[in-house]
Every structure is written in C-alpha cells, then in structure tokens.
Amino acid sequence: MHFESLPSSLSRVRADCIAIGVHDDEAFSPLVLELDKALGGKLKALKTRGDLPTRAGESLLLLDLPGARTPRIVVVGLGAAANFSRRGWRKAVSSALGVVLRTLSARLALAIEPPAELAERPYYLGRAIAELTHSALYRTNDLKTARKPRAPALAAVLAGSAGAGVAALRRGFDHGSAVAGGMDLLRNLGNLPGNICTPRYLAAQAKQLGSTYRSLKVKVLDEAAIRRQGMGCLLAVSAGSAQPPRFIAIEHRGGKAGAAPVVLVGKGVTFDTGGISLKDPGAMDEMKYDMCGAGSVLAAMQVVAELRLPINVVGLVAAVENMPGSRATRPGDIVTSAAGLSVEILNTDAEGRLILCDALHYARRYKPAAVIDIATLTGACVIALGHHITGIMGNDDALAQELVQAGNRADDRGWQLPLTDEYAEQLKSNFADMANIGGRDGGVITAGAFLGKFTKGLSWAHMDIAGTAWVSGAQKGGTGRPLPLLADFLIQRAGRGA
Image (tube, helix red, strand yellow):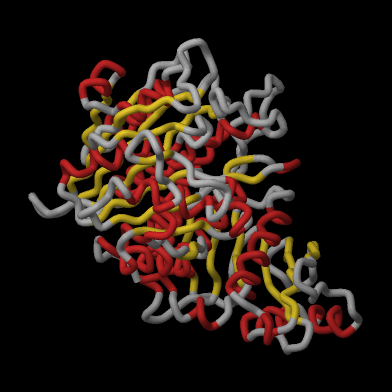
C-alpha cells in the first residue's frame, strides 16, 4: 500500500481511476469543475439529466469518457452539503474504495473533498485515508482450503493537495499506515478460532513482536511463575481448562530513562464458555473475540515500535481460557487476588475482571504515569452504548477525557460513564472482601467499580470494548477497534500528533 499527495489538477493526474463526490444541492467542487471542463461538460450534463448519483450511499462507475486521461471515474453521492460530515465523508470514501477494488485499478486518485473540519486538519485527513484504504484492502484470515485470490494492491493519491499542510498530510499517511498494520494484527488474532489462538499462541505472537522490533522487550510468565506472583483470581479462571495460562509483559523504552510509562492492560480470554456459569449456546462461537483487549495491547505495542515513539509504554496481557471442567472454579468459591483482597466468585462468567485485577496490581511495579485496561468486559456495555461507541470510565476524569478526545480525533469514539462509590457498594459480600458481580443494574459500571478497587493511587481508566471489537452476522469479523483511539492517545502523549 502506497500513499502520496499531488497538487496536480484532476485533468492531468495519471491514474487507473479517479474518485469524485457530488452533492445533490450544490455545484461541483473546484477540482471536479476543472475535470468536467476537460471532459467537455459531460459530468454537468449527466447531473442535470439526473444520471449522476447524488444521494449519500449511491455510486456509479463511468468508463472511458472522452477527454479523460484515466479510464475510470467513480462518482459517489454525498447528499445535502449542509449535512455533510466527517462520518459522511468516511462512508463516501469507503464506498468509492469498494467500487475501485472490483476493478483491476492499481492507482486511485482520490478527489472526494472532505468537510472543512477535516480539511483543516491535514494530519488526520492523511491518517483517515491510509486507515480507510487499508481496511478496504483487508481480507479475513480464513482457513478455507480453496485457492485464495491474489491479495489486492492499491496506491492512493490525494489529488489537489498543496501548501503548508502537505507535510502534516504525509505524516498522517505514515502514521495511518502504521495504525492500519496494527489493526490487521488485532483483526487477525480475533478472527482465529480458540483452538489456534490459545494463551500460548498469544505469548508466541508477543515474542515475535520482540524479535521484529528492537525497542520491544518481552517477558512471558508461565503457570508456575503466575502462581508465584500470587495471582489467585487469574488462576481461578484458567483452572477448568487444559490450556495453561500465560502472563505477558512487553516494554517499549522509547522515552527518557526513568520516565514513568503508560501501562496498557489487556484482557486475553482466548475462549470464554462462561465456565460453570455456562453461556447460552447462541453465538458462543463469537467468544473467541474475548481476547480482543489483549490483541489491542499487542497491536498498540506494534504501532509504538513501528513509529519509534519517544515514550515509555508497557503492555500487559493476562491470557487464559475459561472452560467448565472437574477442576473449574465454582460459583461461591472464594479466591485471593495478587493484591491480597479476597473475592467471592458468584458468577464464573464475570471472569474478565478477575484476570484484570491481578494484571492491574502487577502494573504497580512500573510506577506508571497512567494505566489503561482494555477489555471485552460486559454485555451490559452493548446494551448501554450499542456497537457504536466504547465505554470509558476510571478514577481520573482527565485521563478518561483524554481518551474520549483521542477517539473523537481518530473517528473511533468513546464515551465516559460515571464511576462513583454507589456502584462499588453493589459488590459487597457476606463472606469475602467483595463479590465479582453486583447485580444486573448498572452492570457495565459495577464491573468497572470492581477493577477500581485494585487501582487506588493509580491514574487509571477502563475501556469496555464489548460492543465495538467485532461485528456479528454475515460480515462477522474483528473491527480493529479501539486501536485508532489508543494509537492517537499514545501519539499525542509522545508529542508526535497534529
């Protein structure tokens, strides 16, 4: 995948295809007007006649128009100009890429002009183009035995770009390509079945990252080492599985020696049956995605290493499989966490918070500037926010809002939920320091409140990605989220953003 910017007018751009956008209630943009002049007014005539798509979501492929240097022109409808937004632009670009990739085009000149809020931020424009193009090129890592078609390739050219913003635009291309590569890693890990992507497989992928990038130092704790760390909650989750757990620590020391790192903590349940509190069978196959928090951490570490960000970052992954069995943890069992607090496990399907609490305690040894955990933690978050927005909460409002703003910039949105003492009170137990569930009411927040009991004295935020990490149905697969949000947060912290 290759990106570049060209100041040339569309009539002089050499490409296999040009993609333009047309509003239904506004004249052509200057770029399209200049192209239409070279075409002898053909585009204007088609629009006047009602033969050009103008409504949002519509598209048309025009071939071999007289006067055009390119054999193909993709026209995408943009709807009313007054309603045109960043989201509308992203959908239009994705639509155009879908049409282009059904042809043999290898070089695309993109001339769908963005709304002002994006045009005025060339760094994020470049990132968006790189990420959208890479997403369109992505092909699911399936295990089908049929011969696979050749992977598509496409060079994207942003036409009409010139001036002081070009340097920022090209930096956005570079950063967006690195983020897109991380999103591929995250999607690939999530899409693999649980019999392949096991805790040991995640550990092997972490070691592979350490071999690829010199800035990464990787340490993997086996079951015996985990036990020596006193991680009783983590071991309670893995007890019923024949797959041994792994605890992974990856360090990127790109900042000043001794500077406090950002610590990312990922939930890595490589398959979640619910344990003794067995899940309903419907869509249980999707529980292979319960390690997307762990995948997000591995992907983020790849991005910081790829971009050589001048910041210290530590990635921690607690990797387990949650299975029923003769040795599995029972509802009502009480275990002791690495922090020394006892937990009554009332529901073995509330397992993510159990492995995360031990990982959050482990994070203290790094004396972190901030700790962020990422987890497909609760179905309650899907009920609250749907599949559109990641739930964010924590004990540091400034950190939580920093993540929210990173998501807004990266078009990978999060929303801060309240986290107050009332929710923690729902976790009271008659027999232990706390229970691992607090009832149905406010389930997404009581899960966060449980984690909060292990983060006192830390600047901490929790991201519940249960609704955003994958999609179901005919297009089932990992989304690559929330990597754009995480990457933007880290890039900004490193002082390398817009």
